[in-house]
Image (cartoon, rainbow, N blue to C red; front, side, top):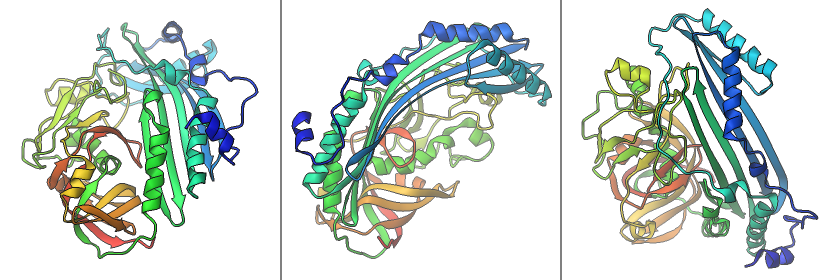
Length: 473
């Protein structure tokens, strides 16, 4: 339905007609790359350290928030952060400021140098890199940067109209923004990356039931707010009057958001530093058939559904790494320091120094299959369909046992069809055992879940998932 008709019919005050058009928030605050280079040069001129590194992050975010079928917040925020790392005689420290005038930059440089001299010598500290070459990635989309409050409001008003029509209550957010990152050092390295981002999240309430949907992309044109709202509305309607069944082990069909909520806890286990510290669930398990043969995992910043810079916190170019091959954990990711310790090659996954974490794969991509969620349901005699999880906590790091609850649509599957809604369950499940019990996979998609993880994952059909009790709601 056209936005104008939707706005006219709606009884909500969600999208008042603006008197004058507003400028796109992100586009007007985009900083020229040359200006970021000048900020870095001003830092270097102030420095007397042996080596100096500067990281500049500029972000602009605009948000429209709605609840009770009404827009109640429209805000925009712009932030510029300059982080200076000084290295002096094998010691290093970092100081940040949100001011870019000469005096503030000089003060940050002096503070970083002073703190560096107070640190213990780091025998693993490596010289800063020189110039590097990076593969191009395209994650800046003019349509996202040009999005206005009116654009977001028009989408929200259609969502609110749908809720009003069906006697439901809608709440959520619609954001759009731009981020720019520059990393430079006194050896001539200069790395630059920019990306736009947009996110839409909506929850529908109907009586005591709820439905939810969420998506985020660099290109705002990939966000279909109407389809997301329809999905959340249908979930809320279908989840009315849930019933109880006994806790136990069930075949589950996990939608991509539910998969993400669980496997997102694995990302640091692929870090070489975690392995060195014996904090990884893959300690002493590399090269062994640990997971199911359906499971193949990469870290791939260049995947078309991923976001992020093609360089790491020290400026090392990121590589695509095969982490798990048909259920066998194969590889780790390395920073420069961890690679030197293990006589390996850096993979471009180091975090900004100094840090205690070392490195992490931030662009997890699962291989998928060909079965849709509907086909998984059709092939299930008895099972449970899960929309997503929440309030997830780690119980056993080595076995990767997590606990948490289902949310926003949990359904009983019987004889190849959805037989009705269920009250939410608490689960206690090893993610390693879960991925060893996968029976079917869907096509991989960019998923958005309860946590802040961003991964490309498929829907999964898993046998013997452990639900410990049914909740009261």
